[in-house]
Length: 342
Image (tube, rainbow, N blue to C red):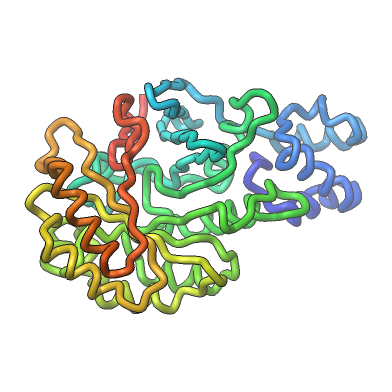
């Protein structure tokens, strides 16, 4: 058993099982999540006999990156080889005083969005909470000079809400202010292709994390061609669920929209998006398509991208064009793909 990925309360329970006090479990949580320590021998304020019993029952394991590839823009792609030889990717993206980590939740993805290379892999398996939290701990261990990841986005390989239990477990560890990693929920974003039941469940968890919707079209006709999931929960059903998602004051729902030349980038597509999001506290991130070998799509010309953005801005929609980082190392949005196993 890997204790990384256990809630602080579960670490307290484990300490009691091992004949120690709950306090020892809290100390263990502090060492792992607050200090990033994985070596039991270094946990100096834990009694030796407790550490010996713990070592017999469990391990403290954080994945080591098999490969770290640096981009010209300063981002880094971290490739992890997991215990079963599966591979996943995380991406570290610096931006002024921000350092964002894009985290994976599955090996591969089963939702087959046509513009996304990860979808071409197919689905292999869900990640455990320890493998999800481990990506954050590993990234923090990689950083120097007391630096730490400042923002976390669940936008890597896989669909987070299709791995719901492990996602929520990881979120509770990441946002635990006393014994977990202590991240503000406002600095964590969960992205989904639009699993309506998962959106509704997440809204009831009281986690207060940001929600991002991979939308990519304002009509069912186009969205169903791009994203098979739309045949299960269409645009109207999806937006109705988004309207019910609980938001803190000044919090918005993010809408990701990959711009594909002559597919979803016309002025009428932009006006349709405006009508769809009317009354929603929304921010739209326009993502010019990131090319990959064999892709059936192209990136629109810059004037077309800016014209699309202008229509949204003129309608009062907060809109940015998000030029993805790490495109030169296969780490940009929609480019993550690793061999499923060695």
